[in-house]
Length: 254
Image 1: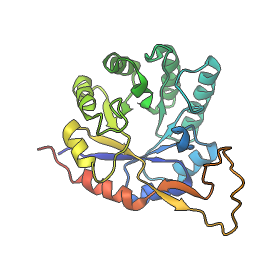
Image 2 (image 1 turned 90 degrees about the vertical axis):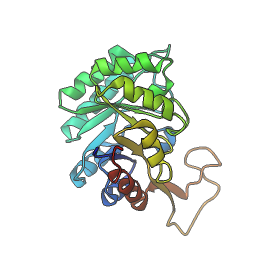
Image 3 (image 1 turned 120 degrees about the vertical axis):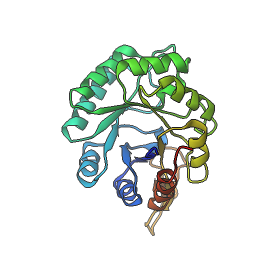
């Protein structure tokens, strides 16, 4: 029997608590999910590491947008990796691409060297899903010494990308963990695992929370977009985490 593991993406303190209470196996800590996730604050890292009995992996991404970085941005990411290591994180989640859509070996190598100097686990994130050749990119990531790859199979959701994910699992042949992520929920996780034979999955398990504010000013938008709702947000649901954990932990290889 394989012990299936659930990694939960958490972008605030409330989500960290919900992931723990729901029985998650690992936390990916970030912030600004509307940007696809960026590096969390030092304060949030401290809180998560101190509060969590499960491993905390920290997303290292200095901004939203693409994954082609200036040397100065890599300097920032390397510094953030050292911070995560100093604060007691279990691992980091990194990625960098060239303009032609390949893995940036030099930049990723710098980040992974920094991670390994703190004995941090390394996950290569969904920058992979923007690569031009998933198979050569997989080999590059393995050669760099990453421990796992987070991917939707270069599709909008992991279930839609299940065929490529299964091929990546086969091609990796145990050299690193392929971890599907994007659109995974209790209604499709069993089908996804059956199609891909993955041992780990990544999910946000989120819910919408309305603001407790009784006074509201509809004329002001903090993000500059009038369509932005300042009075609701997404956070992790302990109930949804528990549903996923129950399904995954009860699955056996047939």
